[in-house]
Image (cartoon, rainbow, N blue to C red):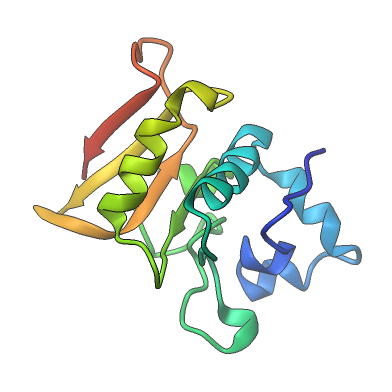
Length: 146
């Protein structure tokens, strides 16, 4: 089981899921290990703090990591519900800067990834990254639009 260096368990799941665990570190076990490694790598490459969920500090972000099956956020087949996706924001870097950082370091990624660029025709203001790739994906990074 991989434990993140830069993200506490409460940053990865909604409060109601966090409270189900006696040992918060066990939360890491529900995620795709490569997805966890990748969010740590992005944090290190960016050199700035990045935010997934911030409900623990009374913030509004609650479903930017794992989403429960009946969540109304996102699609019914979302990679978030498979524990393979994260939506990341930064107060120091733009989404486009984060895309560039990942592109420059793509050869260091442990697996192929997908990055969502737009939703409803608008460029995302957050970084959506997931490891929910298809066997037919040729490139290390697959960009997609919702």
